[in-house]
Image: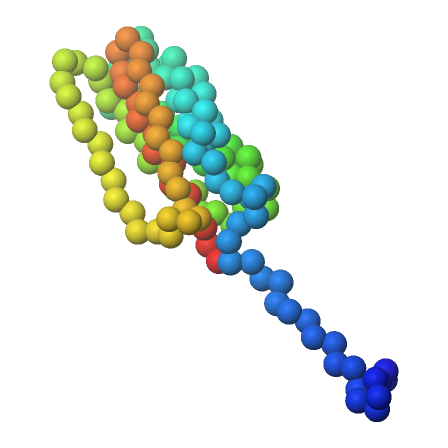
Length: 133
């Protein structure tokens, strides 16, 4: 054991657990919005010709899954919980308002929203990212 003037040297190890994400691990809404728009545009091409409730339901599930997977892949060593909400409806001269609420930490958590329209349907994709510590 090493000593200085007869007193032992004590090694102190500080905790290395991070309570917030690093700069490269953060959720950026602009990246999530681009991913959501790309996925929704590609999936809505199939609904453009004929709208049905069953097709819209399947497309919502597919869009949500693909967006969640791609957003998770875009964040290295992610400790974010990604939640995706997708709404698809037929364009038939009506108005739609979509709202959501969430409790979170404003320093680490965020969301992105993307809207895509084509000739017959609209699609709104909300991507929520909450940091889990």
